[in-house]
Every structure is written in structure tokens, then in C-alpha cells.
Image (cartoon, rainbow, N blue to C red; front, side):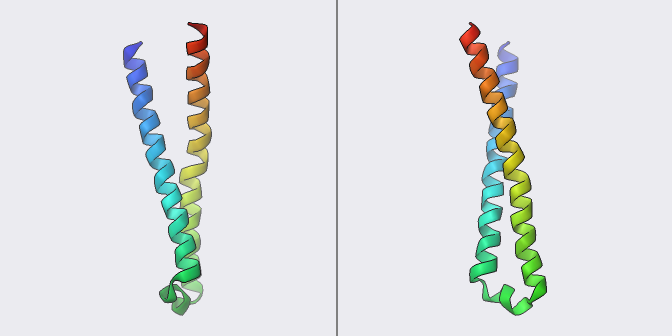
Length: 82
């Protein structure tokens, strides 16, 4: 059972890293879209680049939050049973 908890701890750490990277990509996309003069000068290509940053950020952050919540609820239920 200790190995399973270690594997869960590693998975949780990985998911938290994915969430942080996703949030950073979202913030980068917002920054590029609103404040970067380079993206403004690029026109449509600049908009696409900032939108891709936000999209990949959402892909990384949202599903991992749901899975992480599922793992934590399962762990709490197991601790309550013991």
C-alpha cells in the first residue's frame, strides 16, 4: 500500500505541475494579446499565437483539476473508512 501512495503522490505532483504550466500559458496568452506590441504588429498571426497559448493552457489546466479533485476525494474516502 505504501508503493500505491508513493505513486499517487508522484501523480499528484505531476498534475500540479501541469496546472501551473497551464495557468502560466493562459497568462502568457492574455499578456501577448493585450499588452504585446509585437503581436499587434503581426496582425492575425499574432492573434492566433496568443489564442494557441490560451488554448493549450486550458487543455493543461482544466482536466487535470478535475482528475486531481477525483484523486483527493478518493483518498479522503479511504482515510475515512480506516
